[in-house]
Length: 212
Image (cartoon, rainbow, N blue to C red; front, side, top):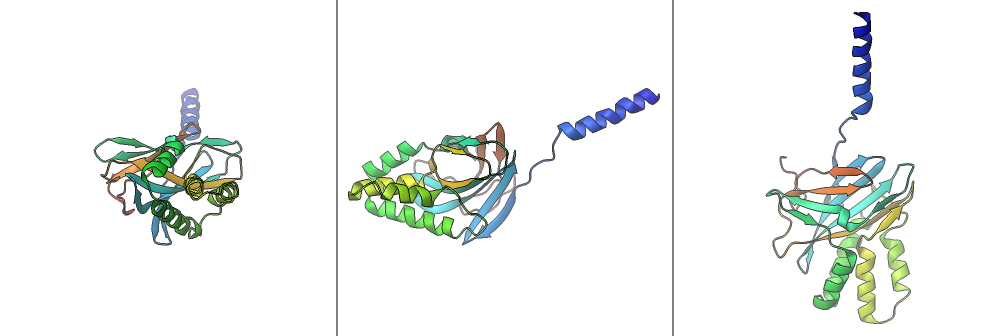
């Protein structure tokens, strides 16, 4: 009987250790945008949906902080948007976005994209990037001269690209979802990176939360 009680106690202890508590999505507002933030494996990801739509792309602004002891590699394809009807929309690679903007977009489209993104990231008081948009912008604009190349550089600086994020560092960027004119609609963001899966709460394109 005593042995059974010991095994029972060990089983309870093991289940306590092995099964972690469920990470909770936190929602807050900043500069007119509604953000959701979630931490898993020591890495915190926050995002907000931007109101700007450019050439059949819906756009979210993401900010990521690495509080884990190891480097994390992330790319836009790690992000996906799951519609309420079950359709999965993957994040578009940076080269596809830049090529589309250069082929079918206008200088005005790029200016609107940059202005919208800067308003969101500079107004995000909860976050300070160590190697994000501002660093990419300064590096990109210093290396080109023509107007067309500057537009491409600006779009590349805004877009979230393949990133190896060391411990203690943070970054940001825009992830683009191609929607063929329909918009994102109601759904939730899912991020698969570093062996973790981040499931955010369901919302619409205004950032309003919906029942799961």
